[in-house]
Image (cartoon, rainbow, N blue to C red):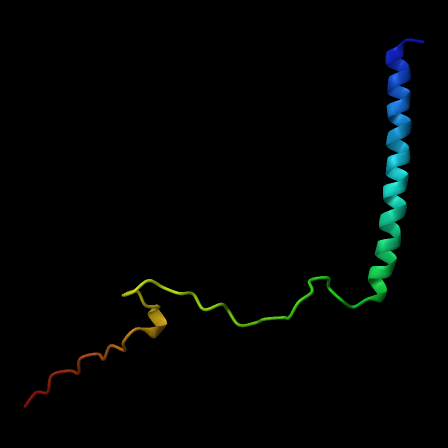
Length: 76
């Protein structure tokens, strides 16, 4: 047998063993995840958007001055 065939067999065997260990480790994590209602984020939930500091002279459209529509001219 050439050394190439032996190397391919050993790499294939190592691949199978590695996949077996990865599958068994993730299987135990998946079963524990079902019993826990935590989504895994951690920290405090914050639902308000952050306040963005704008440069001087720039305002948000919602904070802008209210514009009154001109009234229709009165006919006398």
